[in-house]
Image 1 (cartoon, rainbow over the protein chains, first blue to last red):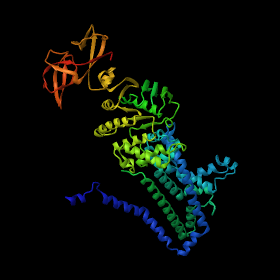
Image 2: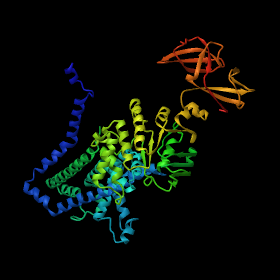
Image 3: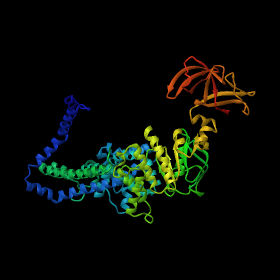
Image 4: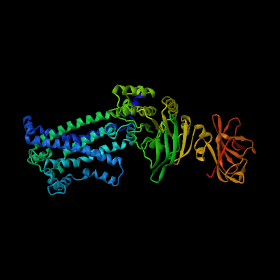
Length: 278
Length: 345
């Protein structure tokens, strides 16, 4: 009896789905990445170090990771506010705004890049008034920042939205009737409940911004050491047939991204565990 | 703390949730707001708590205008139907919340807060759950924690919205008794909302029966059960037989059959006759005010519930004692021991 019970699972199909999962992940993700690492092995450690520590590579990595993180942080704040308005209030055009949030998901990034460039160029609708204030956006690192905000916003909104929808308004009413101010309710009750989702949204928006290429290269100006992102540097090296150089930069990006996302994931797990689920 | 509500009106669109409600709650009372869903009882409770605002009318605590204050300033403990516990906080922190968010000037030190929370958890007999999270508790435990949390701020008034609504029957009965003794112990003016008449009659000192945004009757549990003021109250509380009757020329008629009941002082016209099921006494055919044929009989412990087709056209259910066995097909006479007739319904 017990042997049969052990062999039969309540959810059949473990072998099949697990096999498919491993095969698929290998073909789609792991094998290409392994190829990347293998290609970079053509370089001696010294060459690898030289490419990595060259001024141009370091600057490109700094621009990519620094601006991606800054953009993700801006998206975290603005995205939370947008989610709040979309979830908690009923206003005309709410569904339309809700749909607009998804536009950066669907729009070809090159189109977004061209549109943003036109908008923020010195004679553009937004670029002209900003230029009058002495702020140059297009063809500077600020432009990269703007493009990264554009492509990252849906990630925060779409991760946080369902979680906020799940938080009953009664929770806020309870906090209020217990004497909490609006601010105390947000800090002590709402944000802690949203924390795991906020961290996930941050990580996704960051990852997307780090990997962004299409929209950024149009608006960046692409000045080496100033407004050149790492993915662009990889493409430049490829076009110069310096494949090993390209893979070296790619490997570095991969490792740094992995470490950061892993760290955010741990943080998110920690925040989640503070809300034990039965 | 007394609560006085005057001519309260609250509309949601064209639906009048409260349609001119007047109510006075005495100090230390345990009051039940009883009514079917949509009767406005929860809206009334939320307005008293400051979670909703009336379109017009007054709410006063001890004679002081309460509508001038928000929920935060009113010092009203509110227990939500689905508890609304903070799921990312332990039970201890949930109860401590109201003490921790007090303005710095009056906030107590950590040791005092800990002692107070411990005291409250003892009061609701759940001190051993202090480190658990709400998701790890049963429904009855969550309910008691929600109550302890509301009591932490030393509320002037305690309001409970369907406090036992989401619990199973056995736990509900236990908690009812427990709530009554707790109220006896802390003696804070309390109002609870329920749609369960048994709950209202068993727990409350006074019962307010509401329907369609209006108060139908205010009285002790005995009053509302024994002398219902309106047809609605009679029909809603206790199991009643309702018969459409006609009062004309000093005679009460069911269909075209005159009943042997006195019609003194009744207003002529279409009326409704109410009798409690157990107040219909069974006699031999030809005796009593009604006559009918037994259709079905089912036995429920001490009583037999019989479905009877009255001559006059209506079918009713009565609860008769088991001393005289009824059988399908019997013709019997029925005499209402007590009954009430409400005109024009």
